[in-house]
Each structure stands twice: as C-alpha cells, then as structure tokens.
Length: 223
Ligand SMILES: [Zn+2]
Image (cartoon, rainbow, N blue to C red; front, top):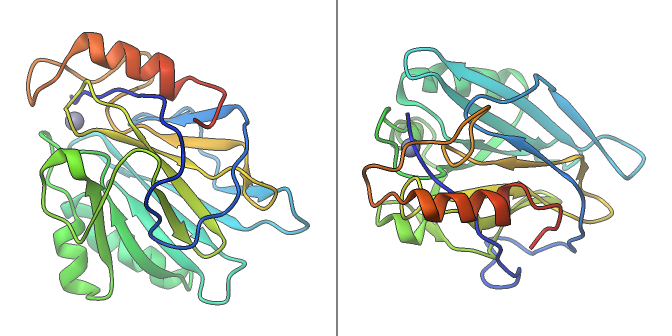
C-alpha cells in the first residue's frame, strides 16, 4: 500500500517539450487499481491519437500505464510507474506496437515495489526517467506542478498531490482541441479505487492527502 494526494496548480512553468493549449473537462481517475480497461481513446480531431494500455504487476498489485501518440510519425510513448519485474514485458509490448519509448515516469518513490525506470534505461539508453523534484529521488528530468510532459502532439500536465508521500504527483492527460477525451489522471497511490494510499511513512499526511484528492484528483478543472 502507498499514499499520496492532489493539489490545484496553475499551469505554466517548465515544459519538457513544446506545450499545447489546455482546457477544462471531467477527469477519469486512473489510480493504482483503475476502474476500467479502456485501451484506446479518441481525440476531438478526426482520428484517434492516444494509444493507451493498462498493464498489471501481480506481486505488488501495481498498474503501469503505456501512453503513445500514434498519429505522430515517430509514435512517441511513455510509461507511468513501470515495475522492475515487468520491464521485459513492457518493452516487448512497445516493440510489438511499433512505438518509440521516450519517457519512463514515476508518480512517486515507491515503498512497495522497485521502479523499472533504471532497468529500462539500461535496455533502452535513449529513454529519459522523470519524477518530481520534491521526491528527492534520482532521475534524468524533474518536474513540478504546472509542468507539461509532451510526447508527440499530446502531453501530460503535472499536479502536485502530496499526502501519501511528500513528493507525490499526479499526471493528467492534456486539455485542448487535439487532446484525448475523456481526460485521465494517473494518481499513483494518492487515490485508489475505494481508498487512498497510506500516510504513516515517507512524510505522509492524511490531512494533506485529503486536500490533494479533493482539490486536484477529483477536480473537473485542469488547474
Ligand atoms: Zn506509494
């Protein structure tokens, strides 16, 4: 079990790729135990762009998410919360789908499983790892609230959602005319199905987690 939370943050700061316009729409929360098995999403444009896969690691009961812009010529992809034990499976799937993995992203430092980002980087040297600056963990790139992580013409916005750990963030799919609908929020352990992550270690705070969930994870606004 893990913990975390959500905060309302104005978009603007750092972008890891050119940012796209944002808008406001209902969010589909995709916590550690997601509510559905939707595998692809349509955008508001003529053709679907976002490829989406939900992957599961049974020992730690962890969901990893694969997202890619399949309309882009290079089909850039990213993984959210990869687990070391399932790296080969994930990379094999990415290869089979003809995607180019560019980012391996973590919502927070995981106490209940080992992240797969390090292993991914050894097997795919071009991949950059990403985690929040507040996590004090190692990574190639550090993000904070309001940052955007772009892959192709799609992007994720970063929301600070402390409470489970001090450095927890939630990644929310972008808002805008060419972004996927419905929007999705990758909450890590801040928000689970019928529950939240624990708050009794790693600088957790139940009060902070409550505020994060209600101001960020469940908000209908993008920021
Ligand atoms: Zn956790």
